[in-house]
Amino acid sequence: MTSSLHVTWGLAARSLMLIPRVPSTFVPSIVMPVFLTVAMAGAFSGLVLLPGFPAANALDWFIPMTTVQGAAFAGITTGMGVARDLESGFYDRLLLSPSSRAALLAGPLVASTLRAVIPLVLLVVIAVVSGATFAGGGAATLATLSIASFGMALVAGAWSLGLALRFKTQQAAPLMQSGMFLMLFLSTAQMPIDYLTGWLHAVARINPMTNVLGLAREGFLGAVTWDGTWPGLLSLTGLSIATIAFAGRAMQKVVP
Image (cartoon, rainbow, N blue to C red; front, side, top):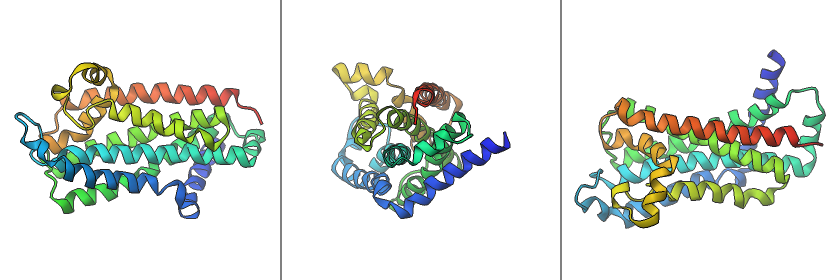
């Protein structure tokens, strides 16, 4: 057990050290959320004028979404790092070592959640400076936003890790990203569920990301309550189990 924990933390620390060494693999998880925050909060600021729109400020609606997106991108970059190790042959050494497969899987997943701290802190600072409304109180709002962000980083990390282990190439990166993009933007990322129509409304209703975004936005739109929190927690739990099982299956099949 002690050896497995050392391996897990060693792999997580190595992934974190790669951020300054290979910034190109992490920069998108910061640049893209900031760009979307500025673009959407400016271009779609008139949404708050719609009757019954849940936010009084466009930032309150879009910053939680872009924060969750940034966390998901942070998780994806972890999978991209594993794909790079598979291409270089370094990962073969790990597979041939006496370390357990569970530890090799847990290390990148721990790194995924830790990497999410950077976009989370950056976008919270932007929210404070830009005048976002923390209607549920600062501590409660930060708590629900952090849970949603770390949870999505874990989900995205497991998803991208599973793909990396299957394809063993960085060319799988577009598939890693498109999967998260589809899940995010086929939900209530841009509009509340009541304003969506047709097939978009039907998909958003069953998309677990709708509940995750509801959890992330809870403190920005009003008081944090259990009724508003549990659907997001349940969705994150289900997504985590599914994607970790997906990655675990790939880990069992991968060979040096």
